[in-house]
Length: 313
Ligand SMILES: Nc1ncnc2c1ncn2[C@@H]1O[C@H](COP(=O)(O)OP(=O)(O)OP(=O)(O)O)[C@@H](O)[C@H]1O
Image 1 (tube, rainbow, N blue to C red):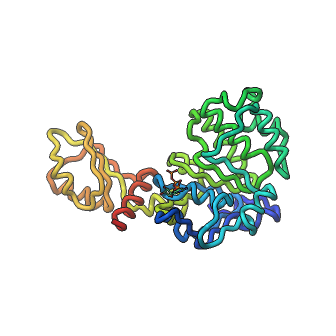
Image 2 (cartoon, rainbow, N blue to C red):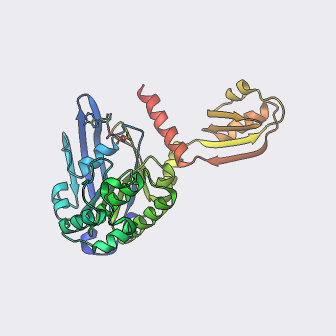
Image 3 (cartoon, helix red, strand yellow):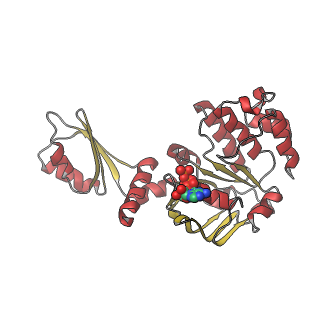
């Protein structure tokens, strides 16, 4: 989707939301973020994907001014991250950082609203995050999923233009997750930019209109989920065979990148499905229920990052 089609038309939201220009951050000899350049536009919902240690949290920390880059510049709505936060333009929900223990949910949310330059009414914030029923509960008595909802309430305490979420639905049950993403969609529809890091690729596929794949601090792919899947190139081929299955013969098929056999069902990935299937018939086999399909985002992600690992090793 064109990033600009979702904007509200309000002048303040026509500008670039986030601009990283050749940003690097190292810890000792680890290049957590390596010459990263990217631009996010108002109204975009962007998923940040990457294997463990790819640099997602560091990228979000740099974006929020919690860490300083070694080189390069980070701009949020045309200013430094801290100025943007002080102006109330950024709401964030991070993985780390404890919530204040001895206060109730309502007290904590009230405080967050009081600190925001453009606060929403406390009751609205509580309701949107689904924490009204637990408003009087002490924060240190919450379950993991409830704690996540409270973090979400804090991130949406005011009228921020950019919402940054680091693995927001970890620990939430299915219902909470669905409600959470419905709310996030509303936020994006109002012209807000939503950037979230996740390990749930199905969430990225369903929610994001743009997906960034980080690998060793670099941007490996940037596009819609469909574009990322196409970039991975491979296709899924599955079929059933009768009788004993000669797995070594299947493994020797051309263009194969993965193979699993369970019972009489064979599933493979191929970078040239037509050629692989042709060679399959060439073995004198008669596959039944033959299906050829594109990769899911998860498989595309695995294929892309594995290819990059292979290139670098
Ligand atoms: N404070 C730190 N000191 C030293 N190394 C760090 C520090 N923070 C992160 N790193 C290293 O930087 C790299 C990137 O880490 P980061 O937490 O940004 O990755 P991530 O993509 O968020 O990972 P995950 O999916 O596991 O949360 C990793 O190799 C990590 O070990």
